[in-house]
View 1 (cartoon, rainbow over the protein chains, first blue to last red):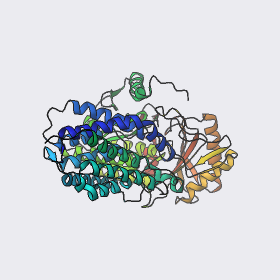
View 2: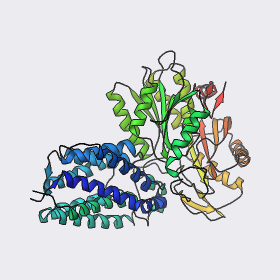
View 3: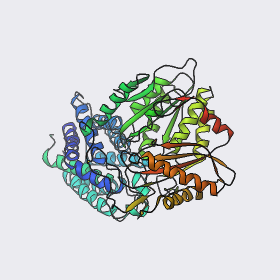
View 4: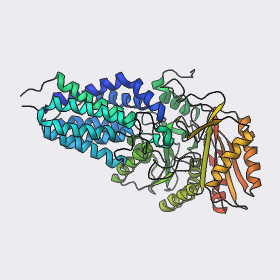
Length: 214
Length: 331
């Protein structure tokens, strides 16, 4: 059966941590252009703490427990806007996945809950040049392709997120620190959208490598 | 870029340890990253707590002490503190009369202080939030994150702290904070960019003969770039920009803050103050009180911000009330 189980969701979060570590400099560079240049270091600090927190999480009872712990740790450790925003997204995904496994439809619903949490807390709309502009197309792609299998759906979600990042380039930021630049924020990709792409790429990588049992 | 640091990751912890060593009169919790007063109030009083990213020193830790803040929470460099930290601060200084959070209007600060206020409420600690958003460089509309909180934070924290010291109630203290913020406007220009230790290089490149106009305090670029000109012309532009957004008229009194952003000598700040004083005098606006120096900095950024707060007798009295903190002290 094509499901996400606990080892797989753990692998996903660890894959995000590895990607953030590897891409820290690039995220910081993107943030320097239109923000304050700390998005990479903040996320690295957060996911380093997440890895430590997951190591002390014995026998998670559900897929959601892993994501809830991830979200709580991000809220506790990151600060800035990205801590509460990503933290709330992971906590919302965690709350939506109470079982030991999640099928593609359930996982899509969790991704939707994560996006809803970000939009509620950040009051961001598509087109504001934020995380929302990568997560929204990624979710749509995942939902559209969910019946072709998890790995394929995650792959198309990652591609859609990447396109979403490119699509933020001509936008003028209307939320977050980049909004202070007004028209000068045009011409740069949004760093938050870029880190969202990493999250979806990590999902595709984890699913491609680890086949769930059962 | 040369920095006096051990490692980029330990800048905050190392600096906080140094601050604690330098100020034994304060209670510095190195684990939770909370700077609090060294002693509890004799009678319950409203506790005033602020916080924000590090890199703006002396804001906020330098303003903890009798007459001003009860506690401050430094976040990572240019990154808001986390909710757990703010909750620890609220718990540490709550004496039964509630807590006022003074929050600069940045998305991260608003989110983290908001989460902390919810957590505190669950524990029965009543919290009111005063949002500081005085920077006229940002258009205040639904299409931006709103105006940034900058120099007015000093005015708000001083006034609110003084009123809380007199035993005023929670709502009264919070309402005063909102009024002081509403009476304040700021604008800044930068001659150089700030260098975040973890990034190791300036946030933006600025040619030798150009300045950034309308910068914030987080190393982000400003609204536009202009040619460097004599201070008199630059100050005129800054004063006029602030006044254009203010309701000041001839005969009004203000508290003026000429604030260095971290990399500008006092010599130049006093020169700027002289120009501000003259320009305001031409408009019939009198500076009743002033502060000249580095109060709300942006690491090593060169440049200054001007904050004008319209001041009636109530605010001047609170401003003159005694204060004893690391960065602001008078009797």
